[in-house]
Amino acid sequence: MFAPDDTIVAVATPPGRGAIGVVRLSGPRTQHILGHLVTGAAPVPRVARVARVLVLDAGGRESFDDAVALFFAAPQSYTGEDVAEISAHGNPLLLEGIVRAAMRAGARLAQPGEFTLRAFVNGKRDLPQAEAVADLIDAATPAQARAAADQLHGTLTVRIGAIDAELFDLLARLEASLDFPDEGYHFIEPAAIAGALAVIIGRIDTLLADAARGRMLREGATVVMAGRPNVGKSSLFNLLLGADRAIVTDVPGTTRDLVAERVDIEGLAVTLVDTAGARPTVDPIEREGVARSAQARAASSLVLVVLDQGEPMTDDDRRVLDATRERPRVIVKNKSDRPDCCDVSDLAAPVVAVSARSGAGVAALREAIVRALTASDPLRDTPAITNVRHVALLDEARAAIARARMAAEAAAPEEFIAADLQQARERLDEIVGKRTSEDVLRHIFERFCIGK
Ligand SMILES: Nc1nc2c(ncn2[C@@H]2O[C@H](COP(=O)(O)OP(=O)(O)O)[C@@H](O)[C@H]2O)c(=O)[nH]1
Ligand SMILES: [Mg+2]
Image 1 (cartoon, helix red, strand yellow):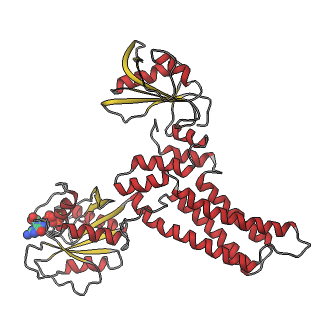
Image 2: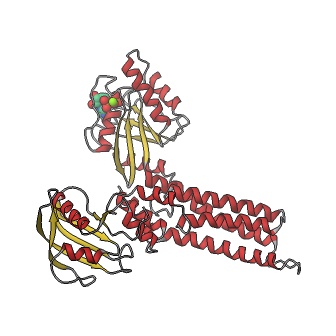
Image 3: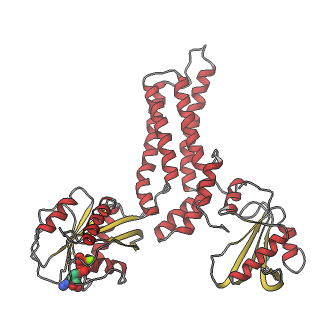
């Protein structure tokens, strides 16, 4: 994985056909290989040039395509190395043929994420920025893309850096006191350290509070439809999806397995799950479906308890309401086109009336879902921290600082306080990639596709 002397090559555009496809090269032999690939004189950095590019098919036959070649001289490139981009026609066989020709001229096929890994190794990006590249490419909603773009521009690194700078300052004073023990002079008093650490912990807590929201944004939420048969769960599911995915009939017990689809609800990536209606049954398939519904509810971020407002509440309705009492939930009174004879006034949960048939109330339902998922905090501000790796390390840094604070409050020897602060700084360094093991890097970059 870390063979920086190789010159790597890969198709950088997605598989499939398009007007243009790009082959990218990076490494010390880029210019040499480019000389074998494209016609014309040596490239001028950052000047696009029309050229003919060599295509080598699997049988070793040569042909040419018309292309535009771009050369970036190190270190002013994405990876910090010499880089070339060849834009040819977007046909997968043709692009593979260019890659093959580059390999014959001395390039090696790139590993997943290897271009971005090199950008990191060469100091063009720190680790959160490199990770943000993958997040940006994977973003499924505009809000996810915004959060990734923020991270790409270094907002998280800046906030971590500010915390680290304060820790560094405290450590310097502690160590100065350690270096001059005889004078009996403290460069900083224990009470002042404890106070300063409390402020730093407060800052970390602000970041971490953001993290739950960030994680929801990044990984999305699971919303499960629950309710007895025939209240209209599948109809609502299809309505929120904007497509007829689940089967809707007036035969109770039609939906027997879980049906899950991804939807964008007001910028949140939501996995919506339709379930079998909850009712006692002897049919073994339906019973299995009901059991799966209960599991799905338990694993969900939010339950939509669907009722039929045209009918008074039944025992089956009450059973579902009881079973979801402890879960985050929204009560959905469906069939609002029918007269209301379903009293829910004693339920402590948001209630929304909708008609899956006419579509009335669906906007309010979407809003209620987002509000329930984001705990009244709409997705106005993009959270600074969205990545579980960052959250775990920040948690560990916080724990070390909390230990140091307790030690300072107990007026423990300065060595102990300093050791904990040192540990906290190490965790922060791991977030931004100042010290990260090869295993961790491999794990991070495995998420990427080839060509990134
Ligand atoms: N009047 C009315 N009927 C509905 C509405 N939503 C669903 N239905 C009907 O209720 C029946 C059961 O719907 P379905 O979505 O299969 O319910 P599920 O068993 O909970 O999944 C079907 O005949 C639907 O057409 C609604 O908003 N108004
Ligand atoms: Mg159904």
